[in-house]
Length: 422
Ligand code: IMP
Image: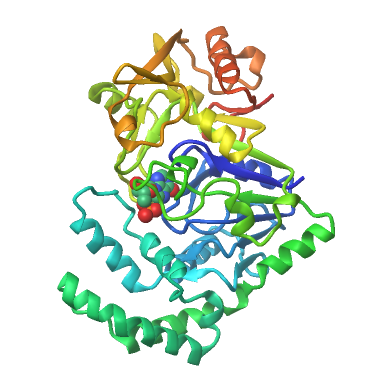
C-alpha cells in the first residue's frame, strides 16, 4: 500500500509520530516538499529525536529513506542530521538517498529570507531558513540543484551567475555587502564530497521499487493551510504541502497512490503570523500551550493555540482526498469542563460553512461553535477506544460525523505505545 501522510491544519499536527509508526509497515519513506523549516519529533523508548530533513522512517533499521526532488536542502543542516543519527547509533549510509533534482539552499537564501521579512509591513513569521527564496529561485529558473554539486564547473558557473545579480540587489536594496564567490564555492564543494554518496535519481529508484511491489510512504511536511495555493496566502510556506505535492515532489504518478491519511491535532495550533479564527483567548491559550508543550520544534517559538476547526479540516479532507484521519494529542484536552468545535464562521451577518478564501473574512470571522462536555482523564495509557472516557469517545465521534471521514488512529501520549488503532 502506497500512502501519503499529510497535515490538515497549519503543521505540527504530529505527523512525525504517525510516520514513525507506519514506517514499520512499508519499505521506503520519501519526503516530498519543504525543507528544514519542518521539525518532526519522534519519541522512542523515552528518547526524543527531531528531524528537519531526513524522514523519521530512518529510525527503523532496514528502511530506505529518500529526500525527493520537491524538497529544498540545506546541506549543512542535512550533514548535521546525518552525524546526529550516527551518534545515536543509526546509520544513514546506504539507507538515505537524496534526489539529484532537489534544490540547494545557499547562504544568500537564508539572509534574503531574514532581510525580506524585516522589510515586510505584514510579516509572515517565516522560519528564516531560506525556504521561500530557494523555492523562488527554483521557479525563477536560477536555482542550483544537488546534481550541480557533483559537477564543479557547472556549480561554479551557476553560483557566479547568481552572485552577479544577487550581490547587486543585496547592496542596492538591502544595504548588505553581498557574498564572496570563493567562500561559498569552497564550503559547498566540501559538502559535495561528504554528500556525493547519497545523491541519486530517486524518481528512478522509487518507480523501480514500485515495480518490485514495494510499499512507499510519502511524508508531507507542514500542513494543508500552509500550502502555497490552498493555504492562508500569503501566510503560507512556499511549497505544495497537500497530497498532490507527493506526485510532483517525487516523480511518482498519482495513479500509484493508494491512500491519503490526514493528521490533525485534537485542537489547533499555528506558528507564525496569519488568520486563526478559533484561537483561544490569551490566558487560556497560555495555559493550553504549556499543557501541550506547544513550542516550535525548529525555532522554539511559542505556538498559537485554539479549538478544533471542523470547517478547515473538512476543506483539507476534500483537497487531499483523505479517507482516514489520525487525531493527535487527545490527552492535552484532559480535565476541561467543556470543549468547543468550530462548525462555521460568521462575518457581517453571513454564515460560512466552507473555508473562505478571503483573508479579511478569515481574520475577522467569528467562529460558530458546538460545545461538548469534556472528560476528567487521564487518557494516556489507555490502549483501546472502548476504554476511553465516554465523553472523549463522543468528542471523537462528533468530529468523525462533522468531517465525514473515519478516524482510524488516536494518539494519547508521545510514545509509540500511546496510540489507539481503530
Ligand atoms: P517558511 O516556510 O520558513 O517560509 O515560513 C512560512 C510560514 O510557515 C511561517 O508562518 C512558519 O511559521 C510556517 N511554517 C513553516 N514550516 C512549518 C512547520 O514545519 N510547522 C509549522 N509551521 C511552519
